[in-house]
Length: 355
Image (cartoon, rainbow, N blue to C red; front, side):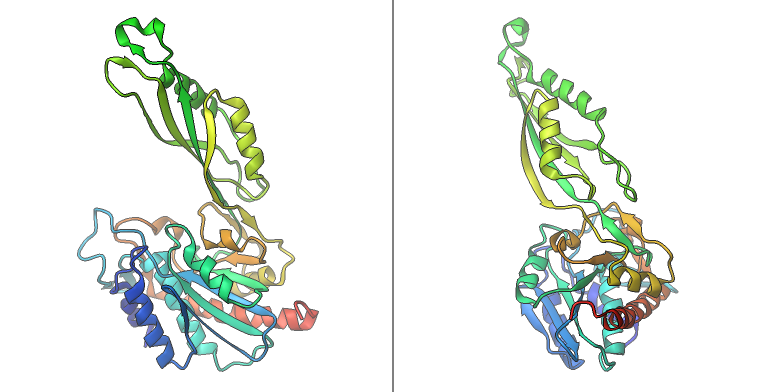
């Protein structure tokens, strides 16, 4: 089965987050027919091969997608083949990575590795990371991981996190004709938003500066009443040099509004360039240096594991109409993953790491 045919199987089964069961069923059937001993937890599936349990290398990617947006040409749930270009919902993010990894597993499963390799294809990445957390609880100790996301096969050594704050400005209601009797909560929120516009945090060496972004705002009960409450949400794409609690404390001290953490589970992550997985990935990609990634992924839930993020496709194509991956990118991705496997175990065997 070619990479195009494999991607067609994956794209033609809708798997919007929360609706991955049918695709998980398909993966179990397909991978089992390849001879892999497939395991399943919810709608996430995985299989492992190799001569020894340690070191244990995990290739992780996700099978869910965002819902289709407006602007698609044709059915987003049917792969459209236009020469080298393969378009469909999830083709780039991240079913292209899934397809390339299955291709690599098929090509390399019979090889001898001084360790074990797990390929995990998880649900719920686009929503809350339930899939990776459930699968990790079932896996033996992980020594290194490769997160499958479209990076143009650039090797990402750091990834931003996401800190979401809910801020509430409180005032005192009054008739709009007697505004001096009240306190306008919207004006208080505006003052705080102005403070946030001017705020930035210590830059990271590869990811740059993090700054707060106000993403939603709402306040007031009636058009003729001074509002006594205004709520706004702040999204901060944090970097590995920042501590979430310290960021929250800094913002709280600067604002008049009440600041509450709405979500902080997506932690920023980074891997030291001396780790075997980093050196193996760079060698497999033919790169001298790694890069940073501004998007979050399931890597956030593997903060204690040396990991990199790399895969076929380009990040700017994701979550857009007519997203696509190239046939040549799938083939290059499969070859990259195969080389990475061999190089990682060569390094760990030679250096006695994780044994």
